[in-house]
Image 1 (cartoon, helix red, strand yellow):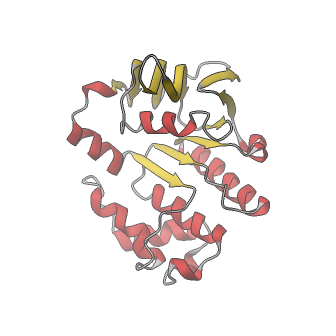
Image 2: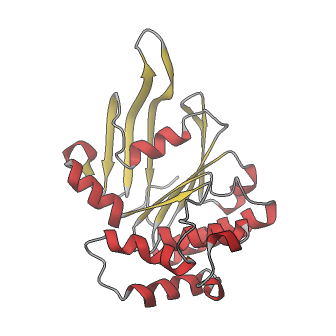
Length: 230
């Protein structure tokens, strides 16, 4: 792969994270190096327990590595204070989950608006911006519905709209199609790929789903905590 001219949004160099004791390590990742750039969808492909979620958790600064270096938005993640990391997660990272994590008591548009309240830099009219995003992902007609009234595919579209509501440059998606049918999964990953290319965001998708490969710019295979091939 030719290295892009723009700096990476997140970069891992020789990163290891193991659980348990050094004598009896349990899971985690070992000696991982990778980078995610603006405008690309990077697919991290591997079975359950291979270390995919650990990698995403490290990138977001929820945990620290035992060895190696994580660089987030140009700075070593260890140089950020706890408060700074919270602000980064609120305004510069977008999270997409397998189980959607929508708030059942809030309408669709309110779910999308909610994350904007936690971003200090968010100055847009929340309602108008949320409606624009719902329209972008073809669900504006569901704005006043509740999550319980939506299909699985519709819920994931709402979750994506919420993830990008703060104009985050980097998106982290953990098994975003696992709860969807093949057709719904293809639609969702196509939407994500198109979005990051048009808006020059970066996204890393952790998944075991081989059907996502054609929609990805790069594919990294992970097994037993190690990258085995690209």
